[in-house]
Amino acid sequence: MTPLARIALGIALLAPAAPALADASSGTEKFGDFLVHYNALSTRSLNADMARQYSIERSDKRGLINISIQKVAADGTAAAVKAEIRGEATNLTGQKSPITIREIPDLYVSYIGLFDVSPPDTYTFALSITPAGADRAYEVRFSQNFVAD
Image (cartoon, rainbow, N blue to C red; front, side):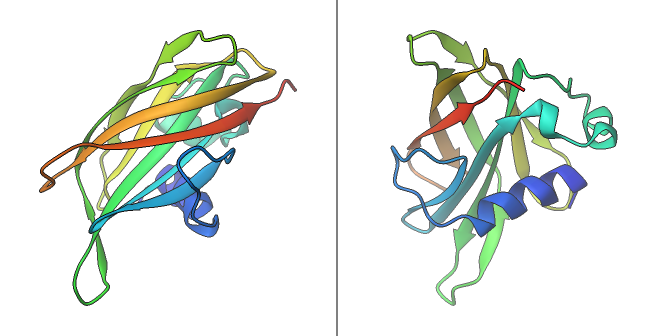
């Protein structure tokens, strides 16, 4: 697993499960046999080497969302799966920022998305996630505060 995926997923996995409209920076939601892990943060908080490795601009005006999807087997084990993901971030005044989502190539399937932010503000994320093998898309919504440094 890449360092970015390891850190971001670690943050998501340590957080308690969050309801769809919770004000949280990270969470996990269950949809049938699928677990969706997510978190959002300012790219300013990324390590400089990590940001350079993944061509991510470190800035208070850029946000990053990390998403991973797992399918839970009957025995309780979970395996990462690929997914089609679309999303946008909306601030408190209703301005929308599309999220450009890309897969992070590694042994572990993880996705990152970049979007513009104008702190201080709260952003609501609306994600449509279709895991491989699923017969429909799942909707994830959560909010995150972005503060000015």
